[in-house]
Length: 190
Image 1 (cartoon, rainbow, N blue to C red):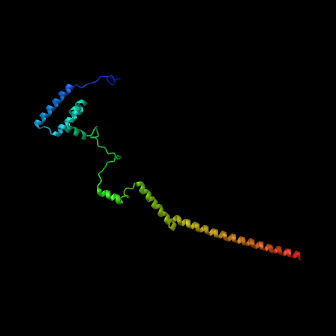
Image 2: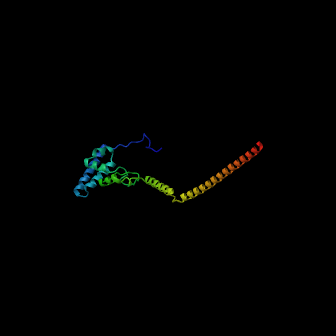
């Protein structure tokens, strides 16, 4: 196990006096630069922030002034200011114009439908149209159904006629048999 990586390892403390000396030295350098006119106020703020971030937390809390504190709040933390990312899932609140809001409220409900909802509505319209055409007999399937239905009706009519003829034939046969039986019985009685 390497030295200094465990809990009881060496601790480094910053010397408060050394920090004060460094702060005074930086202030003298800034004054000299202002007198020489080498840097502008923006560079000074940037340098101050960089040096504060490299210093300890104690010195940064003491050195923070009003103007530098505001600039520090505007600056992004970490590497987010260095890398621009585009997250498609991130919803950015865009300011809405009154004109677009009134149009959306009056008749913009169609524009707000999702893709699935639009597809579902189109599917319902298509099925309704198909049923209408099918009922009118304009589709191939409807024509085939009507032809099949006509054939079945014809077969049923023929079967009904045949059945009726058979029934009449049976009745005639039964009547002839009764007559014959009646003749035979009448001859026996006489």
